[in-house]
Amino acid sequence: MSNHQKRLSVPKSWPVERKTATFTAKAGAGPHGEAGVPLVVVLRDVLEYVDTTKEAKYAAHHDGVLVNGDTVRDVTLPIGMFDILGFPEREEYYRVFPDEGGRLALTEIPAADADGKLAKVVDKTLVSGGDVQLNLHNGHNIVVEEDEYNGNDSIVVDLENDDVLAHFPYEEGALVTAVSGQHAGEVGEVTDITVSPGSADNTVTVETDDGAFETVENYVFVIDEQFVGDEEGDDE
Image 1 (cartoon, one colour):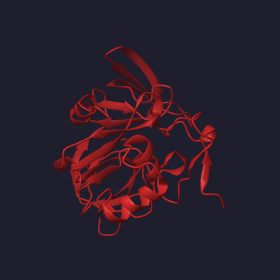
Image 2: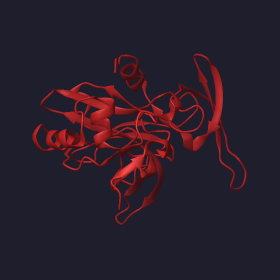
Image 3: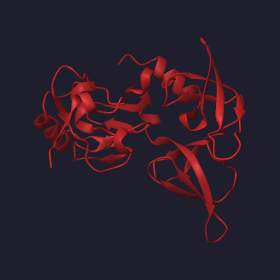
Image 4: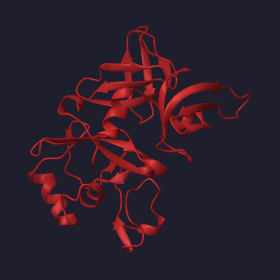
């Protein structure tokens, strides 16, 4: 099986130039599905820390690369939305955030903010003992004692022990960013939530500084002002 991916056929979320070369690295197995960008692409094409895959492998094995708090050696590991990248030797930390057009971008964050990852609650189930299991968008599940969460809420999960560090309810007035669709990367406030009958997708109206847009409910993530501040302060 080939270790390469044609640039012209990579997902729109990949932050690579499509016409500069024929091939790029192929993502390995892991989370985020087809949208996951290989770590080597982030190191080489986004951060420009390395020039080749060989150099990326050396950096991963010697300099230390953290993905969501874990040391990573496999440079084909898929990197996706809201992942936390850490480079302790450089004292640099980044959050993966949607850019305009849905491409993945990196927002530099303080080290103190690198211990938690944003996740969206897809649904929840009761488990033995009466606790509630939150099923998250990235395939991760956590158990909480208090049932105060709803589908489409966002939470910040401690990377070390799965504690909930913050909770952002999905409701009118919530600050959201679109992660898919034609409005991907736009940030605004929810002004209306329309529950569609039957199996049709619910929709949400979002007010931005430049107007308003309507999109599918599943396309938006609730965030807070910290995320907007990080994004605007990034010079990457």
